[in-house]
Length: 118
Image 1 (cartoon, rainbow, N blue to C red):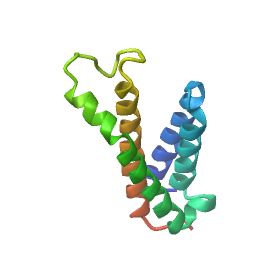
Image 2 (cartoon, one colour):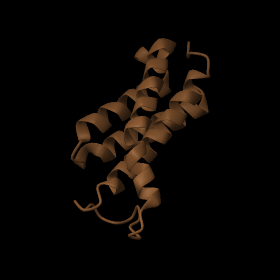
Image 3 (tube, rainbow, N blue to C red):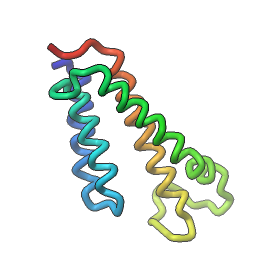
């Protein structure tokens, strides 16, 4: 297995583990497990169509969380990423999720550019 695939597999497996205590854990854990499998090149990760479909899913996620990220960038209240979750500032979580989707999209794009593992 190529070193970059090993790194991405470990990173996204850890991301899946860390999501288990999140309120929307099912969505994010499933996404990160699929990304770990695609990155490893095992199972359905060998199929470039699956990797490309995963890439499209990630791009759709980027579009879903983009408004919250823009709201975070343009907020005037001085709230940052490190702030705790508050009902008054839902865009903090959406900005964090946008960041997760950026990482997922970039990793999937890198993996789809490589030859499948034999």
